[in-house]
Image (cartoon, rainbow, N blue to C red; front, top):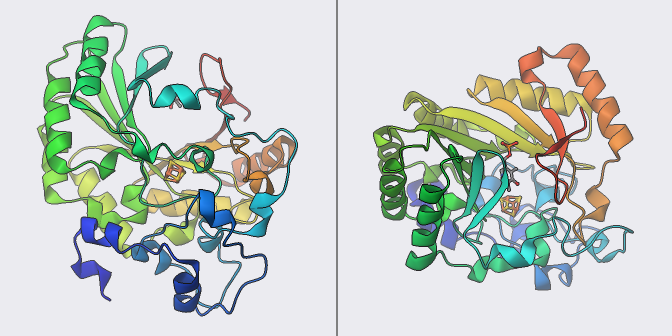
Length: 328
Ligand SMILES: *Cc1c(COP(=O)(O)O)cnc(C)c1O
Ligand code: SF4
């Protein structure tokens, strides 16, 4: 299969969803700790394009660890719950989450192209969430009625799973809101499925008179290959700011050398590191946790070696807080 000849939609529908297929492709003979049971509630899902960046025969590959269902997910960790952010149930009810000053977050879809094992979504398969016409209208009305909001954040799930037509329609509606200055998109798709950056999508971005910011999600330098570079170049060529948020994950990127090379490589792709998030305490993700003390020590190391603009902000999400809580 040469995935580069497939459309992004075709690549989505041919993503790996079967553990045995994935292990066979990666030439892994039943890795230790593998757990088909862990995949029952939160299935394996990873596009071929992302798998192609993993090292064959390496069961410790940092990209593989982000997606492979393992027995550790069934372990109990104190403090880890099914609703760590505190508002999961509300997410499907409303289209808009307005918690922070000046910014409103718009839930566009519950689905993602990839199932990241550390994500809070794992306990809340809101993939049934559909942005109905009615919800979209309510969200636009909400923005219109709140002149305080100058930035709309398109989030999910992954908002770039919506078609270019749907995005164009939404951008058109946002265009008409005078007090709105910026449209921000939070998406992992430019990283895991770079073919998503179609020329139609680029046209939507270019046609907007609002400033557009695209925040991607990449945790390890190995995720950044030539395909991703092409996608980032095209986005940047249309005048859009590119930022990255990562999650600090034990066994994936909890090492100063890795974090440095992630920042350096992101910048060589025209992407600035924005946040490094401490893990949300989602049940099933406890084995990924890096303590706040360890995290702070890592930040001190990278601060000592990188230019300031390549040091992300270490942050945690706290229910009820007026912003992300900055740790470093
Ligand atoms: C993270 C988040 C934002 C954006 O916060 P920034 O610090 O501006 O990146 C906005 N609204 C909600 C609900 C969020 O969780
Ligand atoms: S929301 Fe982000 S972290 Fe969670 S599964 Fe989707 S892409 Fe992964």
